[in-house]
Image (cartoon, rainbow over all chains, first blue to last red; front, side, top):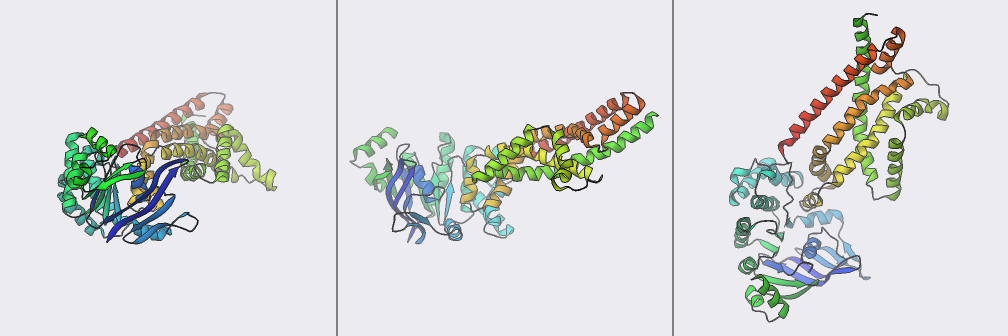
Length: 251
Length: 216
């Protein structure tokens, strides 16, 4: 079953076309990395998929439920708000700069949404959070505030916060770009662990080696289009000049 | 008049001053928040209206606004103005005026919030109301405490303007005694009272700021 399906997505900012007809689907348990130069539309693709931006055209489905589609005139229509709220529960998003709530402790950051949004009993939410914290090696940080944590710890908390809502899939928007190499390692380790547990994920990243190790499929994007995609082996052996150039530069 | 009687009269005026102060804050702080919503609204008409309102409230003397609010029922509706309306008029004029200043402070605080906080809340499924009251507003309040303290201190001193419509707050009393006894002594004492009042306000706000310092 496809957790996510995108058909012919288009997105422009004013007259600038950022996403040009992208189609992509992700199966349950699949890990997909998106690589490509800055300005290629990777982040916009992610923001449209997570509905932080409205696309101008195309279809967006989660678990075969349509969140957005096109009418006969080519206008992009979104499902009613209540419907979108339900669909939104299928995915979580981890931001480049974490976006933790600074006035909440680590524990409250993790349990607040389940308790307030999903109406999970507080004791259940806490139990869930404790498990996640242990899993991510943050047991001793439950009462800390975000400013007291390193970047790597903050990013792990934000992963726990997303997982606490028990989504079907997770999006990562350059999860390690704000971190130094040492902290990057601890976050990548966590994502690898999730991949082992068959978490469905889309990861926008510049970490080529990591993408190669963790992904079932890598997508190379440029100028708002998918230029090339395939298994890591296929992509790294690609004869496409631009792909070679891009990967070569980063090696 | 002996000094004790003078202190007694000024103290009774001080009670009225504190009442004006407390009631004004009570009404203008929430009203300011509502105004700031209007000021940031996507609706052009609403936005323009609040902008003009704030501009007029900040651009004309508070003393004049007091007079207008006090005489409006008579000139606009032909109603007889009762003595009891005086105090109401003071609270009304002060609240309307201070709300305009607070609205701009709220706006500055709200607009300074990183967009990422809204986006994180949205992806986590918070409603708009939950996002504002649980995530945004608490952080905004921490940020705007210093300018709020400023306005609050100004308000303590501005309460003395109530003398123009003869409300018996401390400054009115001090002026009356000064005129009757031909001495500026009561005005000086009133000044000391205002200073002490503001000292209390400043220390209280400092404590509040410290309390909010549990996060950064």
